[in-house]
Image (cartoon, rainbow, N blue to C red; front, side, top):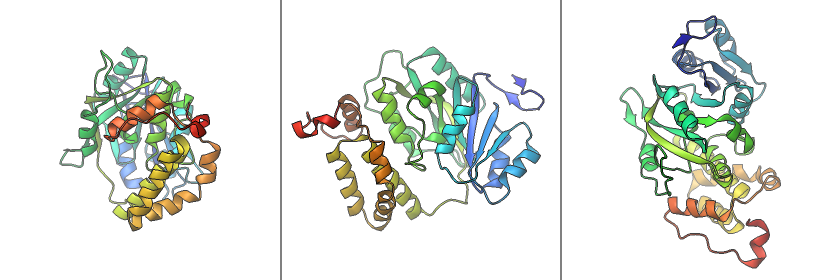
Length: 305
């Protein structure tokens, strides 16, 4: 391992850039940025706490882009476009990749040219608790191609994923409709539609120490519901999108708030609408223990490739 040019930062693998997005979490960010063992691109989502200035002063090797408004997860896409490496590891201001993890994930992408995303195992907090989502990934029922280094999946946590940059950008990356959180689903669906593999690799480890400056549980449920509704409008058949909407309405006050928030962006989602192929919807149904999608009614065939 060699220090990054002109700094004391250790670069674990020159195939990787770490892209970090942050907003108003200066304290956590200054701690986590120093832990990254790769060149770092920071996209600051219009923080009001002096984040960009503090990072430039304390960590001059970090490339900082200060945005004039909060772009949500779309800022990560800008970071991938600015990176000059074939692989990009995402991190939040309260997460970082364990020593050796960047190299291991890059080796997977190098060895498997049809893999677009490596989803890492996540340990949460000082207690190093396994994130429950990792159990779901490990038990994925999706068909697994021979030689794949872990279960095939159709989802990931952005702050613990490494992407093949050209594959990620080919499907548009994270968009400015879904924003954050819940931005991963649409990207996963589009990658699968284009024939890419997503894989969970258990021996790639990311640490996540959730910031105390987080939204309330109800606010997060609302935000995730908003993303789920918009993703359904963007990529699912009309009947499935309607089922998502009715489920949100029936879910209680927090999901209803998310549905109302989504409605403002539904016109933009409709303009970008492209229903994913049937084989991807079949994979999605497997994950939800649903019957596979039936052949579409003739009236719907124009939107179901």
